[in-house]
Structure formats: C-alpha cells, structure tokens
Length: 314
Picture (cartoon, rainbow, N blue to C red):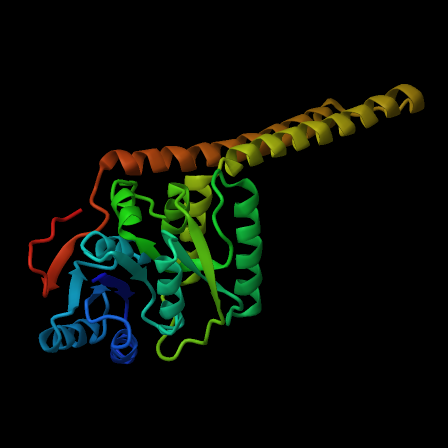
C-alpha cells in the first residue's frame, strides 16, 4: 500500500493547525490509512508547539519538528522533507490557502505516472501591489531563468519519492525549492485551483522575506543580474556617446564652447553609474559564495516527536 507524507511548515499557526488536521483526516479516510503528517514549527511565538505536541500525543501519524529558531519557510520545508518516508510527498502551507481537497486530484495525477504534480493557482487574494509585482517577477524569471520554473505555483505540490531522493542531494544554503524541484527535470503536470483567503492569522511572508525569496530565485537560477549589468553598461556607453557626439557637433558647427568640466562630468557620471551597478552585482555573487563556503546547516532541530529514529541535523 502506498504511503503518503504531508509536510507542513508552521509559523504562528495555532488557530489553523486543528482545522487542517481535521480536514486531512477526513480526506485521507477515503484514500488510505497509511500516511503521516509532519509539522515543522519554525520558531513560532504563540501556542503552535503546544498544539502540535497534543496532536502528536493523540495520533501517532502526526509528527513534529521544532526548530531552534525561525529559519524561514524554505528551511522549514527542507527539514520536513529530510525526514518523510512516503512514496508520495505533499508539501503545503498551514494557513489553509492550500486547500486539502486539491490533494485528491494531485494523487490521481501521481498514480497516472507523473513524478511531480504542481498545484497551480488560478487567482491571488493579495493586494494590488503584491499581486502585480509577483506576476511581473515570475514573467522575468521565466524569461531569464536557466530552467523552466512553472508560473503561479508556490510550494503546494506532490513529488514522488524518487524526486525526493534527488532533491535531498542538493545542499545549497540559499534554498529556492520551486526552482530546485523544476531543475531536477522529472515528468510533471498541473492541478489548477482557486486560492482562498487566509482563514486565521497573518501571512508569514513579509515584504522582506518575499524579496529575499525572489532574490534567491533570480540568483540561483538565472544569470540575469550579470546580463543586466552588461545591458546597463552598454546603455550608459551609448547614452554617453550620444551626449559626446552632440557636444562635438555643437562645438564644430555652432562654435559652442563647453568647459572641460562639462565634458568630464558626462563621462565620469556614466562611468561611476556602471561601476556601482557592477560592484553591487559582484557583491551579491561573492556574498552567496561566502555563505555556501561556510557550510552551515540549513536548520537546527530543537525537539522532535513521534519519530522512530533519530533525525540527523542537516
């Protein structure tokens, strides 16, 4: 009998955990009794951990990992993926914006032979600015990424155990699981759904975290910043050449006298702009090389429950 693993990061989700648990229990009662639900407490400041302990005490299928602090959504997902034992692994958020009902369709596609099943959002319940910045970001990533990263998908997906095995061998510190799963290149398909509004609590992805995740996607799977520096450098050179050509033309044919400082200002201003942009891009890549070279664990486990074997710290 196939075994199913659910991996759910949780950050201040005390009001949502019980609802999600009940929904998954009702759902899996019609599919299989061979399943596990792995919650990863990512440094919550409310009663999330206490609720997880109570659930784990009453239901051995519920397992929890308590991280020593908030390591971020991608690290928490990694912690759960590192310990799951299912034939099919479903990762989803705890806020119920990833409807458990969609899992039935995902499992059906998996049984048809797809190794990866993405849950693709048909709509976004975000404010205007966040919605359209996300749309343009994914268009940009799709255009310049070195791999085809599907649009309108987050971390609500099903992967086969063979995909998980290969994913576990990817040890980079800057985790962008959407790109990492796509990079593996297994056969995939989509299940479309309408994303509901968040039921309780506040979104865990602040603007700061969203920007960091976006940067991880761009830096890890695209050479766009380097290309951008080149394009801006060419633009600056062309624009500077136009200015210089105009000044030369004006001086020769209209006898206009430009002071030396004006000539130098145009050249130096453009040169400094290009230099600062390229230094910033170089700094981003050097910083990431530095982070990878430290080889620190992606997460640290503080406590765990209902696991048969010890979990190695990754």
